[in-house]
Image (tube, rainbow, N blue to C red; front, top):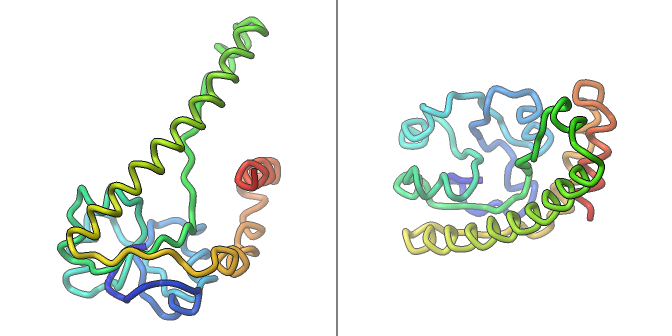
Length: 178
């Protein structure tokens, strides 16, 4: 989370914070559950909205904070871990079923190995970006207790269970807890 509201260390720190979110019900409900005032807004309006104090904060991945120069209009980055955006490895069903069982197994192995390597690369890159943001004058902090944030938003996912699909939610939850 990026903005000008000070460090977000606990859920209570989000109380009343006007935060830009994409026009997406899952984001809106998540930030409402955290006590914030979510405000749907186009990405193209963000920089000006922060300058003019239309919003207090927004959420985005670290590299975008740096490459879009949000350090020029924001003072803080709080690593709240409120969302995880996976990069799925996908293949069409017709191509998948045309592969031999051996080739399918090789793809699965390569996907697992690639995912592990990719996550390590992202973590290393994010550390570097956070260091660079601090050099630009931003304060970067972790939350005190990630479990507090999970608890505050636990019911949100159930609201969307039928829309998203129980199997998808259960699979992603199991992977997240590995």
